[in-house]
Amino acid sequence: MSPGSGSRRTVWDLPLRLFHWLLLLSVTAAIVSGKWGGAAYALWHGRIGLLILGLLSFRLLWGLVGTRSARFLSFWPTPARLRRYFSGQWQGVGHSPLAGLAVLGLLFVLGAQVLSGLGANDDIAFAGPLAAWLSKADSDALSLWHQRLSSALLAMIMLHLLAIACYELLFQHRLLLAMLSLRKRLNRERVAAAPAWRLLLALLLALASVYFVQQLGQVRTPAPQASVATPAW
Amino acid sequence: MKKSLGLLLCAALLSSASLAGPLEDQIRYRQSAYAFIGWNTARIKAQLDAAERYNKDQVSAAANAIAAAANAGLGSLYGPGTDQGTGWRPSRLKPEFFQQQAEAAQLAGAFNKEANELARIAAGDDLAAVKQQFARLSETCKNCHSRFRTRE
Image (spheres, rainbow over the protein chains, first blue to last red):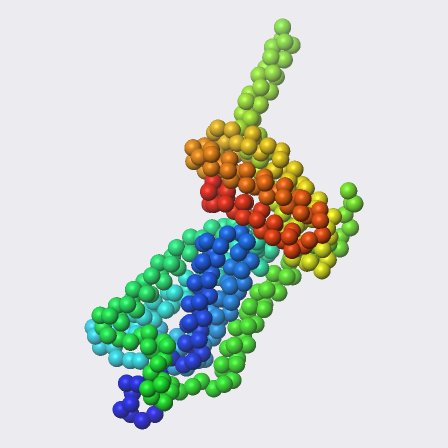
């Protein structure tokens, strides 16, 4: 990396950008299927939820072992950093402390939404994989929270979009370009890539988390023809 | 005299018990009916999920049971004031159910129609058709839940 070409760096590496846009697609699909899909789409809503679980697991791991700007520690909004940011002294690449706060908030609400969904049921013919481990009353309570949180999530997404619009239009800060990484084409230089084994590890563990949750559900779900003999009438 | 007074007291007790009863009985009976429907819905769902072990008789029996509940006249358990009482548990019926009788009748009618249709189709061998009709029936459940049942 030669100094001086810093203005055209790729800030977000490919795994992170893929994560972001896949998350956009899957959350959109989850909202549409959840709010307007009706009972027949509950199964698909559940599958999309598992996909989001995988994406979030990946992001969590990438925030620990990923590239610099993806790491939580690099943008963790400590009070000191926030103070510096609001007094105009923050100069960095990647999430600003305020954006870091927003990112953590979005990940937290989305994570809570996924977890509550895993134990929820629709009182008709769908139940999340973890519902079998809960009492009906607890699963019902989670279902209610799942519905309430969806409003919080929508509000946060609106805030997210509004902030991007502000950056793009008022501050002339090309966030979208950075997330789509058209900069890369202008300049061959890349962000220092993380070693492949880390990416592999994060991907594997993310897949494992989805598999694990699914298996947890299977373990508790009784087979249609139970092995226990019941009276023939 | 004493004996007849005792009888009178007993009768009064009994009648007051049944006076407290009717509304709550309605709620209890309909909650039971929906739990019964829920059992049979779960049976069909389990069969559809494990299609390689599909048991037509089980599904048909469950579909007939749902249709029987639908045809039993559940509407008679929705007397005025039954949005307020406690059956097995507090009723979750929204008060506007009583202001929107036409809509309620339409939603209930849709449920009855699809339940009977499922019973008809489940007697046959077309698994795809059963699946499709089961989805239609589920839809009618959801429509009424989101319209007339409070989230608790």
